[in-house]
Figure 1 (tube, one colour):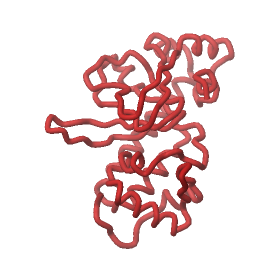
Figure 2 (figure 1 turned 120 degrees about the vertical axis):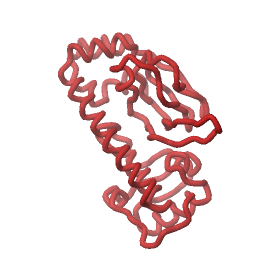
Figure 3 (figure 1 turned 90 degrees about the vertical axis):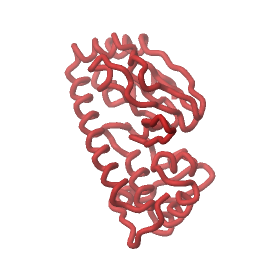
Figure 4 (figure 1 turned 120 degrees about the horizontal axis):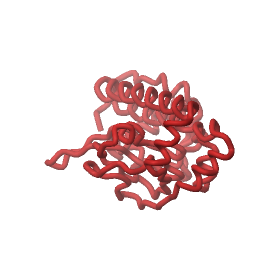
Length: 230
């Protein structure tokens, strides 16, 4: 998918007039970020609204001793950084590519122009930030209360939020290592959890990725017996 296609298919892009949409596309540009590399770094000024054209990324915070905790994941079609841009602030977290990513960048001036002139764009931002807040609360509950298999299930289900991702499709091009990083679970435990979810008929795992068979089941999944934490 190209940058122009991503913008046109985005929830907010569909709410713009054709003239405004083309003007926005003309101002945006894209870059490639290799797996393991930074998309944004904590402390740097936020100069762009960013979206993933392809790939998977993770937002996280790090401590001086090297410990890292994941805040949220980002899949193709998703945008992030709106809160920081609105505050005209600096990034308070690190954004890292878990796989090779194509990243769309909307300049701050373009973002502000849309925010000042487009009611549909503002409605989208409200929905997006509301969805993020709900996601953070859910993640907090998951991390504190659920075992690793349920955490994997919730991480997969979290990639299907219509306010955040337009349409990820049933097949997620995620490796087990990438999914484990998103969920904060070891690779070995991720493998065991995926097998359990597959036996439950919720997903199908292949070399191509993870196919979601029962999204409602993933969202509702709670393991019967606790497993060791990853």
